[in-house]
Image (cartoon, rainbow, N blue to C red; front, side, top):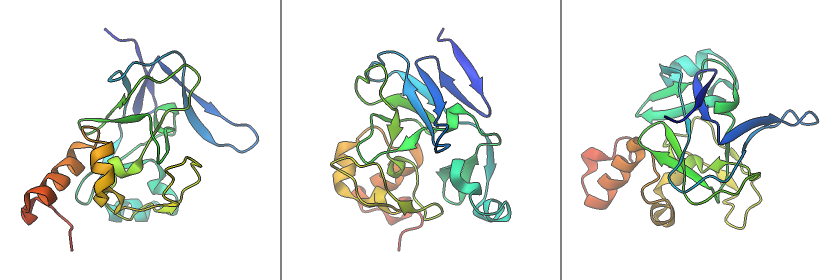
Amino acid sequence: MMNMRKSASSFLSDCAIGRVDPRTDQRSVYATRRINAGELIAVFGGSIVTPRQIAQLGPGAGRYALQVDEDLYLLSTRDGPGDWINHSCQPNAGFRGQVSLVAMHTIPAGDEICFDYAMADGSPYDEFDCQCGTPRCRGRVRGSDWRIPELWIRYQGHFSTYLAARIAGLLSGQPSLVVGME
């Protein structure tokens, strides 16, 4: 059985470690060793909340929220390394199921572990200017980014269950599967 350590409300595998930059207070997660494609990195945890509940908590409360369904979010109840996996428009990790994060390809030891928030977020609750600096940077992270067909191909098999169902609804032409669409 894989050795997992509890990190606040989320779990971070021993293949990764959280770091805080003392100059900027930026939190990140890095590979402690080579991580093979498909290997489990983290399992997100917390409490299920609505957008209204997030808003009542004040500015920045949605920072560690993960959308799990239409108008439902998994909100980490404590800040910890399992929640510090940052966004990148050129990620090396993606979803397996709803809350498990796995390596999309081999990740060398020392590399920062990142996922594209478009793999899980389908609402505009936490949009921001992207600073990932990768060649594929979109410039802004939006709740509608999951609708970009190029990402469907690039991240195939790595969208959260919730968004995979939305994408399947778009592709099949069944609007009942595409909740929240205009």
